Image (cartoon, rainbow, N blue to C red):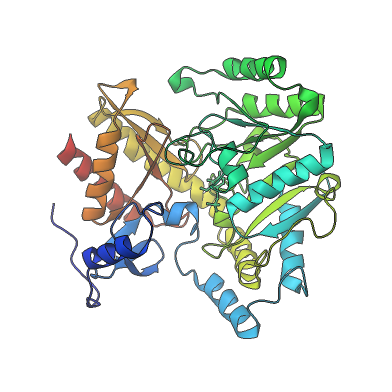
Length: 438
Ligand SMILES: Cc1ncc(COP(=O)(O)O)c(C=O)c1O
C-alpha cells in the first residue's frame, strides 16, 4: 500500500521532530496513540504537519460528532469570542448558560422535572454526580462495574474498573467504592451473573441502605464497547427504586446522538436519576454537565458545585449550536446509517478473517467495535495485532482508536455525518492493513 500523498504545503517540521520535542517536554504519563501532529481538520479529514491526510474514525474520542469545524458551531463560538470569553458562571452568568440548561433538561429522557449543572470535563461531571447523590441520600457507598471508565480524577478513577494504565501507581483510592461484574455475554458473564454479584455485594460488603449511587455506562466505552443489555439497565432501575439508590447513567461517550438516539439509555426506556454528559455535547469545546431529577440535583448547598471554568461561554455557545445541528441535520438518524454501513462491511471482513475478528458490536449507531482474537477464541485476546493495526492504519492515512480491558478492541467513532465515500475509503484502508498483518 502506498502512503497518502501530501496535499497541503509542508509546514517545515515533521511528526518525528515534534514527537521528539514532545517526549522531552511533556511527561510520559500523558501519552499519545500516534506520533501524528495535526495542522488542520475539516469534516471527517485531518491533515498533519507533513501535509499527510487521514480519514478520521476517532473524532478525538467521540467528541467532534458533527465533523471538525462545523460552520454553524464555529460561527457560534466566534460570535461568542467577540462578545466575551469568561465572566465565571458562578459570578455573573449569561443567558446561554440558562438556555443550555433548559435545553438539556428538555432533552434528558424521562418525565421528571430536571435541572442541570455545568462543569468542564467528563471526570468532573462524574465527581459531581456522586457529590449530588451523596448529598441527596446522606449515604456513603457507590457501586460501579468492572471494565467501566469514568475518568482520571481521584473519585472518577476510583470508580473506573480497569487497573492498567488508569489506576496502578495512584492508590490509595477513595473509600466506599465497590465494583461488580458487568454483563458481557461474549465473555461468559450473563445479566443474571451480574445481578447475583450485586446481591452478594449487598450481603457481604455494604448494605443497600448505605449505597448512595450505582453508576453505569449504557455502552462501556474505554472498557471495550460492550452494551449494557436492556434488561440489565431495567433491573438496575428497579433495584435503585427498591432501595432508594441514585441511578447515575454515564452518557459521556454515548450521548448526543452517537448511538442513534439522543441518549443511549432511551433504548432501555430507563430514566436516570442523574446523567453525566460531555464529549459530543459541544463538538470539541470543553464543557460537561450533570442533568438530573430536580429534587436530587437541588440537594447540595449553593456554592457546593461549580468551578472557575464551569459552563464557559464558549462551551455554552458551542453546546447550543451543536444541539441545533443534531436536530436540523438529523444526526441521530445519520448515526444509524453509519452503523449500517460499518456493520455490512465489518461482517464481510469477519467472514474473511474469522480467526482474527472474534466479535463485532454494531448495534448502537456510530459507536462500533471489532474485537480481535487469536484462533477465533474469545479468551485469546490479540492485543499485539490490535496495536499493530492501529499503527499501520495511521501509516496509511486512517485515524483509528483501540479500547478494551484486554487492549484488543478496535473502536470506530466517526463523525455522524461522515460521507459514504469516506467511510468506504477508510474501511478499504482498514481491510488492506489487516490483510497485510495476518
Ligand atoms: C463514559 C465516560 N465517562 C467519563 C469519561 C471521562 O471524561 P473526560 O476524559 O472528559 O474527563 C469518559 C472519557 O472517555 C468516558 O468515556
